[in-house]
Amino acid sequence: MKSYAQPIKRLIDELAKLPGIGAKTAARLANYILRATPDDVEKLAESLVEVKRRIRLCSICLNPTEEDVCHICRVALHLSSLRPTQK
Image 1 (cartoon, one colour):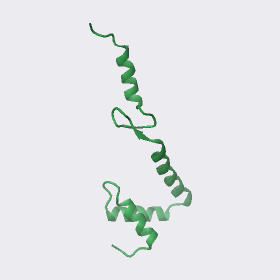
Image 2 (cartoon, rainbow, N blue to C red):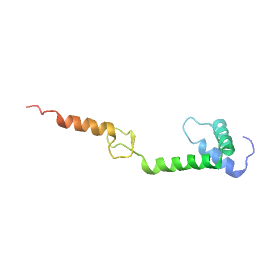
Image 3 (tube, rainbow, N blue to C red):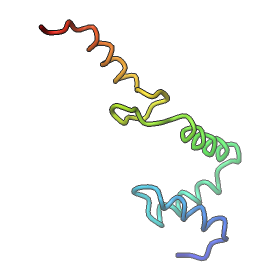
Image 4 (cartoon, one colour):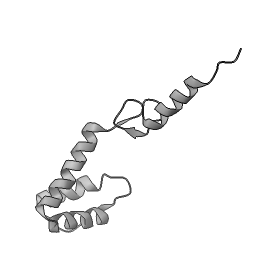
């Protein structure tokens, strides 16, 4: 790998931890981030932090959601509660 300044190398190393991202792709992404405006980089960083803080996995189906139970499962539970019980 090329010789990079330490902050760039750290960024590349962190990006390379993402699934499907190897060292070359991580270096390309790092270069993109270096050339992006500070505002765009802040928006990206804020969106990463927001997703990590607000999104969890549905307790039923494991889809990403802001609630304990996602909308799909909540509707399914509601519909199943409306069905008459069999005797």
